[in-house]
Picture: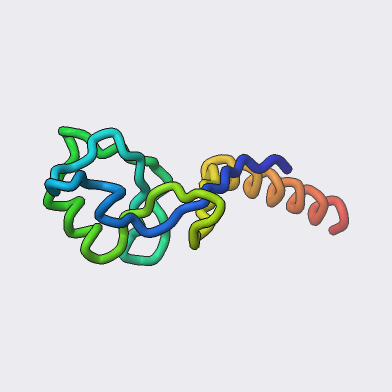
Length: 105
């Protein structure tokens, strides 16, 4: 079975991560969103002029914006799993199990 997985070291974004000293957004910052159900959106976002700033501010206010961390910072590991591949592999394994069950019956 093949898994494709990437692990990022992330931490909750601070004001200095996403805005300059005047409070203006720092365009070009990569970030991840923590969903309300406690899981991460597997897409990496970039703060830019097309970002919905009101939505971003709401997520930030609730500690749901995460940025990449350095080695020495407190971090939360974040795994990006290719769920389509996992589903495909699971279907294959179940198919193989069905074949074995039919042979032994």
